[in-house]
Image (cartoon, rainbow, N blue to C red; front, side):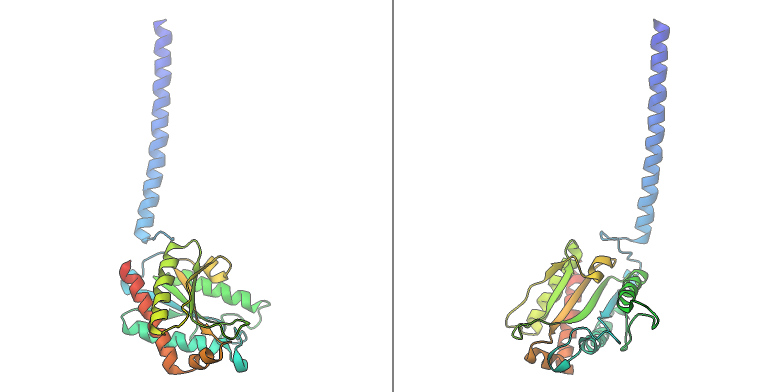
Length: 245
């Protein structure tokens, strides 16, 4: 009887040792992974923050080359206004001490001339550039349109499940509403279908600066003075967002 009890105790002890060994190995794996992630400096959205020291921001002028984007009053094309505002935004951010990388700085699409699907390749390369550069945040500049020409005002879109995207969108939207003295202020809007918002790493928002289908707003968006006001408002929003971080 004593021998049987001894054997049972030995078996239980062995089982406990095996369990302890397996748990120790698992804890070691988790510890190594956590250390690796901390060394890379990943934030809650998986964004590598190794560029944080130089405050890198990515600015994405939407569309370009064979893709004109939205067509507004009098055949006004979105792509040129996107680029003009983006270049002004780059200058503004650099004056504030940020480093800025552009997805394009000329009327050039991010696709090969021989590509069968230029639009898809263009979007994929924008997403790839964001992944490669790992900026603190990304801002994609666009213009809006609507069947009712009375609709106007800037609006910022963010990926619906991104808490940081929402905070950045709120900061930029508030700044745009204030600095552009918008009479009918629009609110930020969560989205799950826009390719850039779905596929891009880190924090990204799409800024629709105005409606090209509204005659008054379209006229203003073509002037350098108004474009500078838009760029300054976006930069203020970026500043505010990063300050509260």
